[in-house]
Image (cartoon, rainbow, N blue to C red; front, side, top):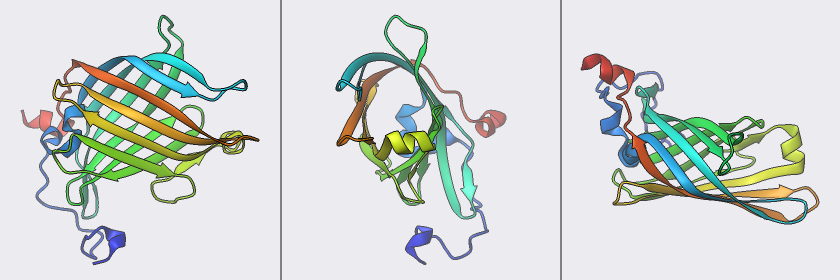
Length: 215
């Protein structure tokens, strides 16, 4: 056993034989996030040539359970997500993001993968208890695991050094996030680009395909 395998046996090929096909029952701290969500009180603070700009935004996030995923003995349960953001009263996309939220029951690891259509991807990681109501994930530039990858223009002009997201799940059924993306804007000091919003549920999540097939 070594840390590089997260405590798994040295057999890297054999998949677990006792996998529960019902993802919704096995999402750990991610379970409350499953569904369709709307947030109308978003606040974005971003860099501009003449100083920081604060922008209100509205968003819709869809988080859909996926079938269990294995890497040999490693097992993930997860949610595929799409986040679509607009400015109040407008239809043009302000921000669009896709990816996965993943939970690894054996280690208590939570992972968020994200991709945006400006040529950037990231993978953030944190740890949480199965019933955690708050957890934080971090990705850092330069890492080959849980890192950040940008196209050459962004790397030169708006370099992302760190991405951090804190999720808080409330007793009233809502959840919120607080993001800080640390940027090095060309010729300037580091800038903390922040986004935060509270999400209200507007639709339930359908079971993952394997679970649906057994109904």
